[in-house]
Amino acid sequence: MGFEERARALVATAAKIARLQELSLDADVLDSSSASLILTGSSEDWGQSVDYYTLMLEVPIPTYVAIDEVRTSLEKRIRSRIAELVRTEPSNRVTEVVISPILAEQPKSSEPAEPIATNGATEEEPPSFWQSGYFRLFISHTSANKESAHRLKQALGEYHVAAFVAHDDIEPTKEWEAEIERALRTMDALAAIITSDFLASRWCDQEVGFAFGRGKLVVPICKDAIPHGFLGKYQGCKTQGLVPSAVAEQLFNLLLSNVLTAQRMTDAIVDRMVNSISFDMSRRTMTLLAKIPRLNDSQVTRLVQSTESNRQVREAIGVPDRIQRLVKQIGKTKTI
Image 1: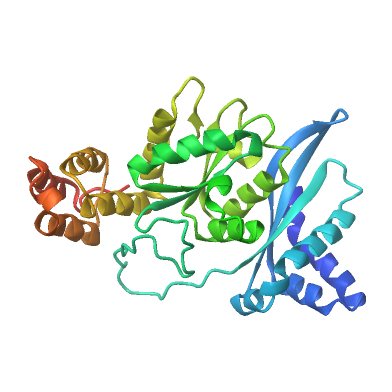
Image 2: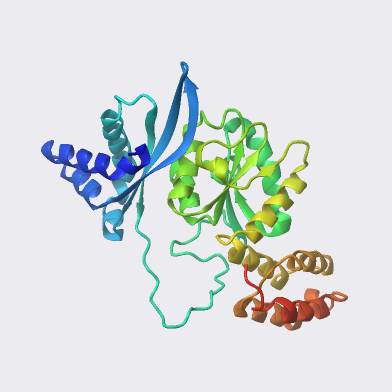
């Protein structure tokens, strides 16, 4: 049995120990959870190969709400408890525990529902650092690479991508750990700037594990190191010798082509056209729209309406005609 397959057994054992110790809250959370171990990195430690894991615990929504104020401390206690259970296995280490809610199921329908464009709306009220209508990208990076992350964030604005960079977006008066968690819960995807010091970062490790646990796309941005663990299986961006604008273009193309992010990325580009503030912006957005493989009904409607309601679109030379041709060519005719 592989280490990942022992998640349920480890959690069940930890629950029994907690109950014997009369720690009912810990035991109840562990018993009600759906557990999985996610490989988030590996390294050589005194000649021994060591794999690092994040334990993901998905709990019922009422349980998640009930533990809201103590969730962080509970995660730390469970991490220590699990670490004790695996201390005889030096090649495997559980470095983080993330408790998240089991996602509610969508109502079943006899007909497949057309995806609804929500302009970035989620069940949780979006934090103020996410720009309305933009694709939400969390950039995971070490503190030594905050300038690179900042420059990439600026370049991504051209593609209507709002990038969360902790050093830029967290107000000094806000609880920084809570704000990072809010960004992770409301993001559309995560990009990890892979550098030689990335693996050693406890926070980067947890951020990537959180994204995997929520089923979000994780894109490795290979700066001066190669992806490790699960990250090694994902298509990434090679950045050596590239300026930020070129890296941003690579990211945009990946987000537009991946099934997990294609619709949200398309929504963002459509929003960019609908809210265009200049003729030049409309023409540049048209170039981005030309790369889109499919438009759903809502996106088609919004684009067509923009040619009537927004002067910067309506009077941009050639743009209304190009939108009409695009709608005829790819409106619900191609699949991603």
